[in-house]
Each structure stands twice: as structure tokens, then as C-alpha cells.
Amino acid sequence: MEKFFSQLRWQDLIDIAVVSFIIYKIFILVKGTRAARMLIGVGVLLALSLFSRFLELYTLDWLIQSFWTQIIIVLIILFQPEIRKALAQMGETPLFHRFSSAGEMKTIEEIVKAAQSLANKKIGALIVFERDVSLGEYIEIGVPLDAKVTKELLISIFHPTSPIHDGAVIIKGNKILAAGCFLPIKLGADLKKTYGTRHRAALGITEETDAVAVIVSEETGAISLAVNGQLEINLDIGKLRQSLTNLFTTERQKR
Image 1 (cartoon, rainbow, N blue to C red):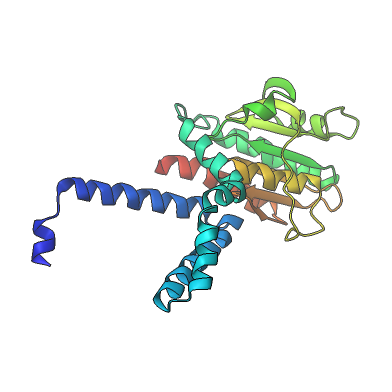
Image 2 (tube, helix red, strand yellow; image 1 turned 180 degrees about the horizontal axis):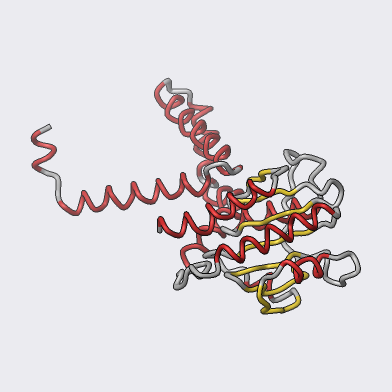
């Protein structure tokens, strides 16, 4: 042990720290997503490879080694959403806070009141918050607004008579950047059949980016919140207000 420490260079410490940080970030990125289950599968294959070599199971070892030659391509295909999200986060530089300290609570309150009104009338809605990762590609195909967030405007956008009520509203800070935006739909047999297009779109955009989405169900009037590809359903107004406050004020203060 003493010999080991005597041969340890300061470059080795930096090397270990960097690799540890990368592994930690990967675990944080895939936590709670389908990628986590896939990584477990990769770990099982690695264990089988070591097991087959130890017991000299040549046929099994040959099959696993043949698979490893293609593993990089397979991982890129399987983890495409997670890789895209990670690269997008690396490429973004948050120069400004998501909300101004003066108007953050007012903006949240306007959104909460709008969600409550829409839920009471069973009017479907999808409100997406841009955070550090840009949603520019989705904003471009929507209707640009650049308008201040107000309850009245949100209700008018999602009213069934509005030509843009089917798309999503994208908000950054206290501004509605665009409405009528179409988002990537999450598909999968593991999703509940009761999830409609808005819920699937909310899961899709929050899985691919760090966006947050509020959904109002047209069928039931239930309010849901999507974060990191996970859905929290049947929220009351108090819970919605608290969750948004935690995401956009408490979290900002910690940064």
C-alpha cells in the first residue's frame, strides 16, 4: 500500500477525479429513465463476459465478444434521446436566471390560475417551460408571440375556438415565446393507455431536454406535471404552485 501511494502522481488524482465526475453525471442523467434499465443489461453482459472467461466457456465468450464489437453503435441507437439531452446541456450556457427575482412568483401565479381555470372547464392545455436547454427548434414551427405571461392570454390560447389550441405554449422567464408548437411524442408499451397526446408530448420534451411541462387533461380536467421524463398526475392547485416554486425559485437559489 505504501508503495502504491509513493508511485501515485498528481496527474493520476486529476484523472480519477475527472472519470469519477463523468460517471456520476452519467448516472444522474439516466436516473429514472429507460436508459438506467439498459445500463443494467449492459452490466449483466459484462458480468457474463468475465464469468465465461473465468470458467473457460469458449462458445459463450465468443458470442459475447462478438456482441461487444457492435456495442458502441447499439448504445448510440438505444441512448439517442439521453445523448441528445446531454450534448444540448453541454452546449448551453445559462447567462441569465430563468425568472427575474421580481416577477418569478407573479409568473408562477398566473400559470397556476390559468391551469385552475382551464381544469375547471375541462379545456386541454400543454404549457412548457424552457430552462437551460434551448427549445428553439420547436419555437420556430409554432406561432411567435413574445408576450407577457398572463392568465387571460393562456386561457384564450387554449380555448377550443383558438386556431392554435392544439399545440403547446413555450414559456421562458415571464414571456410566452410561442404557441401552437408541436413537440416530440413519447411512444412505448410501458405508457398508460389513458395518456393522451398532450401527456405523451410532455413526456417526450422533458425526456429529451430539461424542460418542465404542465398538462391539463381535456377528458378529466386533471392537472399533471412532467419533469425529466416523469409524470406527476392529479395535482391540486397548491401542489402545482409548490412544485413550480421549488423548480424555479428554490432550485435557482441553490445554484
